[in-house]
Length: 233
Image (cartoon, rainbow, N blue to C red; front, side):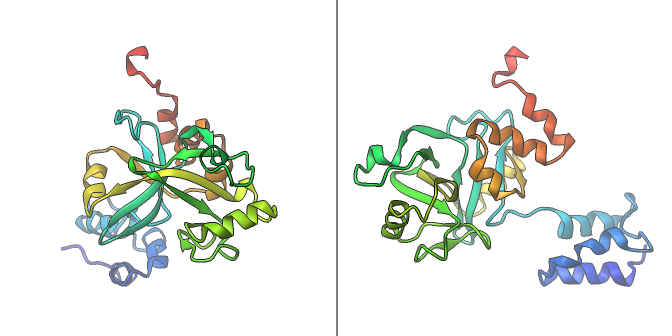
């Protein structure tokens, strides 16, 4: 049996306790014991340590042949992922409405409302980077949050202390029961990726899907050129 070097054993051990900074050991191991593709340990450790896991703050990018009308060519920011399920917001499907159209007393803001997903379609949600100014915000990342005191939002927008570049409003959200999203990943419905949240907030909505695929690298960029209707190819 091929022996694991000490560094790679530590990498496996570290993953068990979620100290992910040691992932790089797989790439700097002087013995290269896990970089040989015919090594059974490579497969095991690669799966355990290097595979990207569904997590809060990641994005889902719909694969080009996903034809579900709710999610075709969508990008979803995952706001929660735990034992109770997964929740996120579609960030690239604007509606032909602004918040003032549905809440007449809301201060004038040019931002469109976004279709956030098929769950709770009569409820309003928002993501933002103003946790220091909006009480009860729930963290997604160190800088970005979702929800919070809506009265704070109204006050900040009215006083121009919260700009349209810092907040995005949604009607509804996307939700999955425990393990449901894992099944969809196995069925190749989604790509899972990290993202630059700045781009999600500021990119033209019609370009986000293609832009995020290109940011994943050349192996994925080709999908960004697929036609909406494959029969036209």
